Amino acid sequence: MRRTVVYFRGLYHAIQEAQQRFPGEAIHILYAGCGPFAPLCLPLLPLLAEEAVHFTLLDVHARAIESVESILAALQLKSTKVDCVVCDATQYQNPRHRSLHVVVSETMQRALEKEPQVAILMNTAPQLTAGGLMVPEMISVDAVLTDLSQELGGNGFVAEPSAHALKPWSGRIPLGRILEVDRERACAWFAAGISSHLPPVKIALPSVMAAQYSLVLATTIRTFGAHVLREYESGLTQPLKYPVPAPIWTAISPGCGFNAERLTACSTGWPLLILLTSDSATVTSW
Image (cartoon, rainbow, N blue to C red; front, side, top):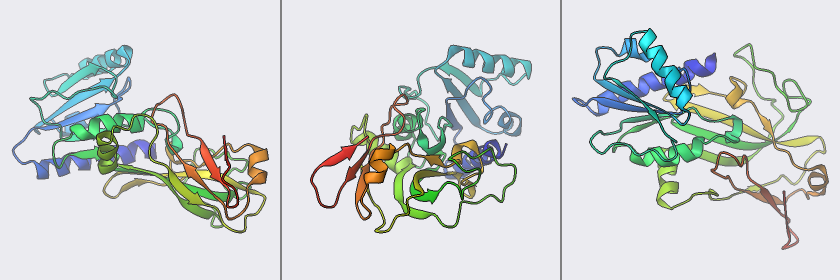
């Protein structure tokens, strides 16, 4: 529930900001991966009925678009303010005659595992008009070491939280940021012609590391402005235990490090983490 609220509020305020940035223009919002219910668009249509806004609802599945069109018709919301398009969002090209002011896409899982969020933003963010806005505004994935028995639920599993006060274990050891996605980075990756592996990030392990610690990826999503999904606040921000094979994990020397790469294709999931030992040129990967 909180996930939808934070995305909804973020998008609404992004549209308001776009109206301030582009006075006198009809604000064009692309909803990439709207699904069969378009939950971030449909509730906004009555609120924006008198506003100069236009939505393009995009989904790769024809049946999803058929569902959205049926809902629009049933609610008598079908109008010239909404276009429904069947298209792969990683290949979509915005019409040249219409500026694109806001892109919104909620096509991710925790730690950006699987699903094409990054690839979609790399295609759509560069098509925004100068000063255009992206929702979510920023997605970050951080690597931490933690004792899973001390985290909520234990054993690497955390149930969907029922209270907003849940917080990560205070004894975690932060390792550094694996990935940060915002408009500037998405545009830079596109301009660099990156199509598979994002640039690697080197992470150093601490010189002392308890045996019970696991490598965990922690996600934070800022949809827009002050609207943030933090850890444990939704399924998208549940900590993800990275599946390091036990023989490799036990062989890691404290004080060494690893490089982390992210594959952008939706079918590949998270990348290999390549360990670099401090006393050998040999690398171990998994």
